[in-house]
Image (cartoon, rainbow, N blue to C red; front, side, top):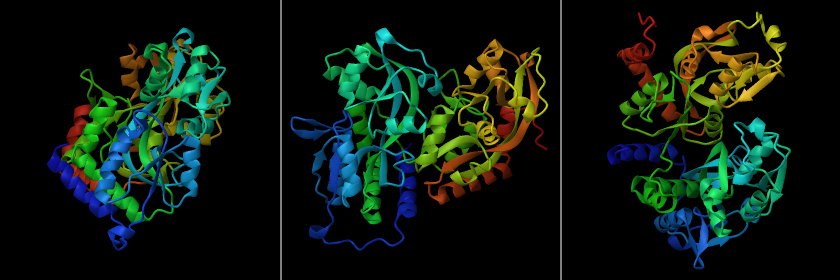
Length: 484
């Protein structure tokens, strides 16, 4: 995003994020001081030559300079620091991932970085997994207590977890075969392998579990005004290049979390990555046009639907598209649209001797494939279905349908033809056996995003419909649609 565009958006943030009743500025000598707590987690925060180092401590120094705060950092174990922050009125814990469990335990400023969590296996003992359900069947998965990823796996029903004191112990057990998998990210595991004198090629990434956004987490006793000032300082560091430079220095990349995080999934023709590596599609064109008309150009990131959905559910300032609007989701997001309509079908392989004329018939199937976190999955779960086979990738389910591993697959008529074509099949190879529902789909914003942002996006979308741009985008992607 150009600086002029960023400056405009930053000024908007100043307005919408400002506390309704800002506390009077106190004299410098009586300003409240904060107790900063961190763990050693290279390259984000660690000790080098007896001094704090890493992306977060350097950023914190800049923030404290802006706010005239002392910047002493207390390093301790994650478990101890987490507990200390919950119990200490002026404590701040970093770098902290925001998740469902922690969301209401702290006040938040950020995000300052993002990282992907993967399952890692030792190379001699590589395990092929393509989803969370398969990971539940391995013997042991090493985890560290109170880490966000450990909390997530517990929430997902994992019962094969073995607790380790720290990542160093986890690496030792992984390489010795005492545990089969360990969830971590590239930065942490490479650092631990280096510390252990092992090659980074001693382990291999088997499956991406989720993306986390990292923040400064404040005890709820810290004033809203202080958290606002902290967030304002972070935003300035995004605007003036400080955070970009720190990302390049410590993470070897110039990308960092912008003011708004925009996510979508591979769901052609609505959203997908083209041969040039660009995210495109019908929904993408609509989102890009909305951003263009509002003078912003946030990067659009392609991820699994389950990952994007969780990010939007838990984090503020997240845009996720395209999403079908259902009663279950209604109050969890802010909605912009509708931008289209689709019908969800239960598909069978052509020639299969199956008759599905009702949901009751579908219940009798041995295996009904459905994508994790899709609206249709939530609908069938609410209907009490117990024969669902989950995958995060619709292509995997398509192959399972065509090979006979599942009896049927739940998908929409708007995207299944493209999925089939991409895999070398045709729409004639399957049969839409039963229509589950018809629904509208939207662009959404997380509830932590100021409503004015979604309202502005809706107004822009209405203007696109009024001047014919919306219809032109429809015609581009769905030429058979009658736009009269």
